[in-house]
Length: 213
Image (cartoon, rainbow, N blue to C red; front, side, top):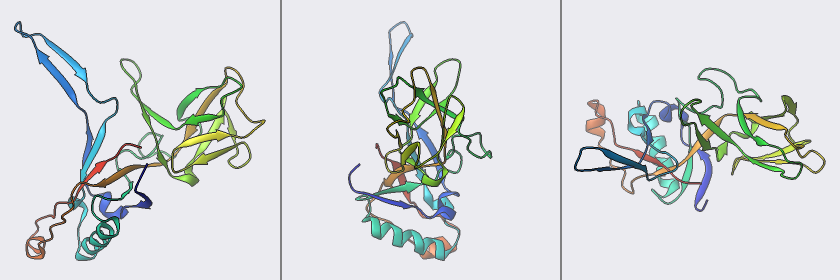
């Protein structure tokens, strides 16, 4: 990923933002009224307005400084989604058995972190590119492995790399638990700040959009 800073947007502001996932679906309606629907994007793209999280002049000043250092839309950064930032259920701590990463074949040493949504109808596997390094836990066939001894975790790409001699055997189930951030950028090069309106309770508009790893 080009032009990216491995730094997290101010958490106190991000946790008060509004937004969520966006999909792109093409719908063609026939003369009979029947529809053909096609997903244009394989993965959702998330958007937020960070302005809802700004509750003080100090927080607003921090955001302006953060915006300036990112040069507006130029540099990407990490964003913490209050609703969805863990491999576990909301409120639970990550465990090494939370998410399935794949099946071993005695040769492949690399496994991408991912989070799966849904079970029965059309499960969606979301690649996780910005995990929180110290939170990553990995297991093979239910046995937890040791970071730095059995595997290495790349917190910049979300790749789990098993060391020589520790590569999962044929048929072994690889699972992981982790916290993660979303790679984003500002969706504007102009951050309009009206202090009079802010004092009257009007939020500033601070759009943030997810970027592809």
